[in-house]
Length: 164
Image (cartoon, rainbow, N blue to C red; front, side):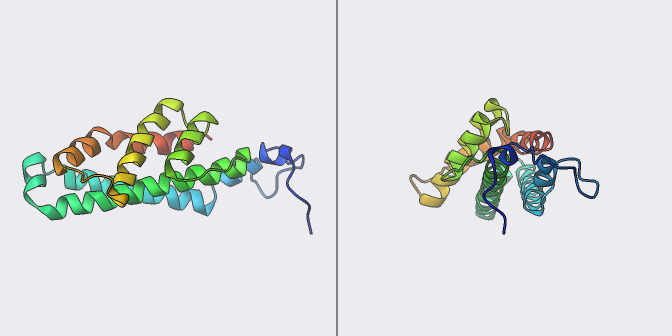
């Protein structure tokens, strides 16, 4: 049985030769099934939201199913973002986090993603928390605007994760 992982391993330096074509331990973490699934979930939710929002504000607001679908997709996307952040923070930095917002903030502070993007994603995580915990009722016009204005943040996250 192996002992605890050293701080060198957390930083991505295993001190050994790469195995079977994997150029580094860090790359294997980045390409893990968990990260790949998270990225796929984010991109899928983004595509579905973009499709729903493309009908325009008036049509979006006229059918309640649109806002219900976008709320669910936003929750799914933010949870996938936080899961990827949590995984990469733990495996590459040895950093634990508690909650969706905390994972995103720490990902920005620890160089997993740029701090500017972390700030944008934090707002989406706050919106997710509001939807889940019903801190206040989210107006469908506000939902349409926030999701429409922040749609590119999902792609930015995926691009930045690819550079980890």
